[in-house]
Image (cartoon, rainbow, N blue to C red; front, top):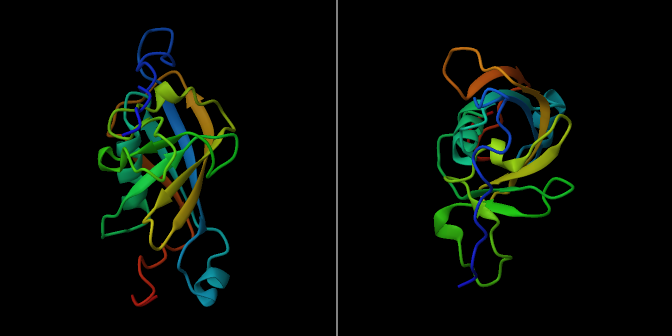
Length: 171
């Protein structure tokens, strides 16, 4: 079994007061099993999510899952290379050690948002359902030092209709 790298420290990107920062992330659907007609009616499908830096990639996944009105859980991972869908992979614990895969950079349930060193305009990838291949690009729109009171992660904007999770579901 390949040895995985430990995720970065939880506090390397906190505000000067030692509090977590607020990240605003735009999550764009790049591809997946949608019909041509659905794609024409919804040329852009995106969701904007705010999340605290001390929350994990697993929390971000759950927010995306809910933001896109999905109902059936599947495997997923995040990729943090120079371009979306490339580079270091952050995976579910059960995905560690796949012999045909590159070793994971970290686990989604342990890796905090702030530990990734994200800056404004940084993009990274999110792949949901390894059979149907829902590919997303996530863009960091803002990193703010103060987190207003409230529940996070939080969906703040929806563009386009959520596609059905499966093609046989009515559009």
